[in-house]
Length: 336
Image 1 (cartoon, helix red, strand yellow):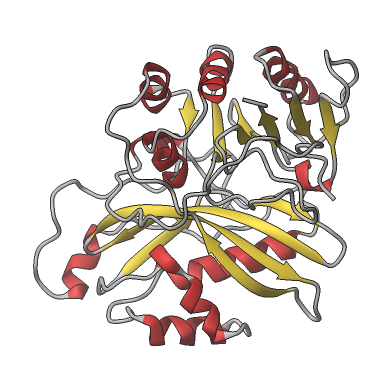
Image 2: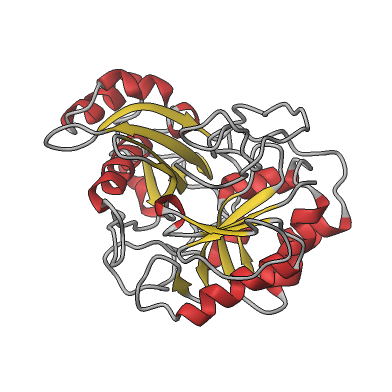
């Protein structure tokens, strides 16, 4: 069970659900990478040319789509095949060869993985009418990790012959043999862009040392990320370059396995999976780097900092915590 947000939030909130991200440029994500069997910290696939692909056959327009690679777990992962199961499903849903668009074809791809084909009906913005699509998983992070059930959050970028975008999918799984089984998909549903943005929100979007996946970009543009979170992100960017997995949308509404509201959906938390080019989950990453980032997050005002190790000290009880679900990232939460 996760220790995130150890007490219920007194603040009522509404969670924005499904806003299709296709068409977002993902401008802040250019420095992000994923573990795809290449060296950690390698660059993400290059964004396609900004000019529209030629209006010819799908085969001809496919040249405009970037090369992508399947996500693969790296060293230090807990239950790596559970994450692999989740990412393989997202990849199967969000990428298809020429002529493979549509729900029926998506169901066939899911069936080929040995999963319930009707999961394709929950794919939301991953599906489309474009003749061809490719998808790159940015990261796979635990949203919750219990003995017999789990949540894996999968932020991804998607390019089609009609445009580019991406989303984050909360993939729910249960223990089964020979592999864990997927029971549900919850794609991110960010709020629509706000009419005006705070100075801090604009600075976060423009800061090259903060790498955001498409759903997180949409969350900031939606104006629902608290100023305390934005201020902390900017403060940390003064010392570190880091990659975010999730802000608001695409995260479980409750702390996984409990009925306690998570700080993420109301815009009061962010998760970081890579710091100065080093993945938090990688045992080769210097402990001092991650621990220093956690202490800096606490100093920036966070009451609830989780990560791969239990840190001592803190200005409030339980300010630092650790568990299996936070083995692969640093959680930074705020009360308001």
